[in-house]
Image: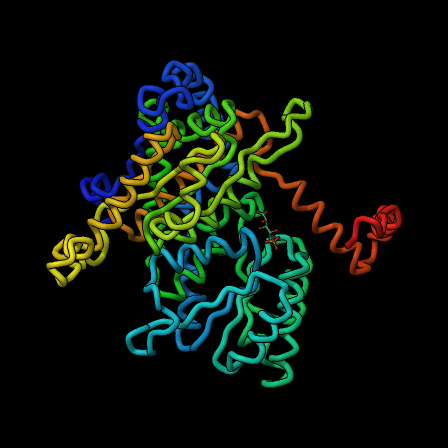
Length: 471
Ligand code: PA5
């Protein structure tokens, strides 16, 4: 992969096709191209603003970061069997997306030898069964745990850490933490930082200005990627290329700006859900990562000028071809409230021919001699055709191939799309008061010091509930 060669880079450029969102293709529920042009100036201003503030935002500059500490930390854990991320939301979803996009579909099941790097597990839930299984299943002696929390306070992550900590001390003795825990957290604040310092744990810092959902290309996502053998330099080179494309001031040639405009125009006409539907098993968790990025960034009550706006469109996670047999019926015939965003792949790593057999059974015989590659791409095109015929707007990002460069590029394109959409909505893309509200209520319910007032308010609200409505 010659990811510094400009010719190779342009051969790996992700393409965006928005034809199927237009009225000329899908009819009355499509977009008038004049409306796209009308938003171009505002999108151009948003781009200029992002460029002017890139140092403050942090994430656009991540491709140029120094990754030596990450590579050194990864090198130190190469010998272990299991690398376990304890994190949630922005401190987990990117890790999962990179792992499933770039490593073998059965990576953890491959025997050591075929798999040259540690297994990866991501524990991103306070589910007791999951946490019990983590403790029961993995041999702590050959496991390293990466506790990732930007704030260093998140209850789910802290609880998993406390469980792992006790298990390590019980099984391997009081000094085990230093050998088996790596902390990734804010460089100056948070309880996890205090714990790391107190216990003398190895710590990686993440840039304080980069929010969780924009942090996949920081120490948050890059350490587990490097530990599992992903070429993180290529990932960052792809992100740099993505920024180059997505910061093009010519909005009509800028896929991130056009995608942001199309999403907002669709939302204006009632298509207030966006279905992210990659046709690739490797890309299935990109939808999960995107769902958080889009939902947390754009789902906002208040505009920057202080008005109540309650904006945002709902991301839906889907997977082609699997969900053709589950959700597509709704997308084709249900309410006109969705924009479908396909992700297609030109060239898969394998070309697999479907064997010919049963020549007398025409319903089976036609498959023989085609490839799975042809089949999955035909299925994507067929779903787009069905949507077109039913008057449903849809658009397609196409990756020439799946590799670290295109995945880094895709992350940056979608981050830029989100930032541009947020600017066009005149909201703060980078805060998450709704998430904080849930965290605060959890602290109150569990009796954390300082949250007594909130606990009393919750108890008062509960007292007003009526038994009549609990059946
Ligand atoms: O995007 C966000 O800010 C959130 O989803 C956080 O990533 C999530 O709440 C976890 O937070 P933290 O990394 O502080 O533990």
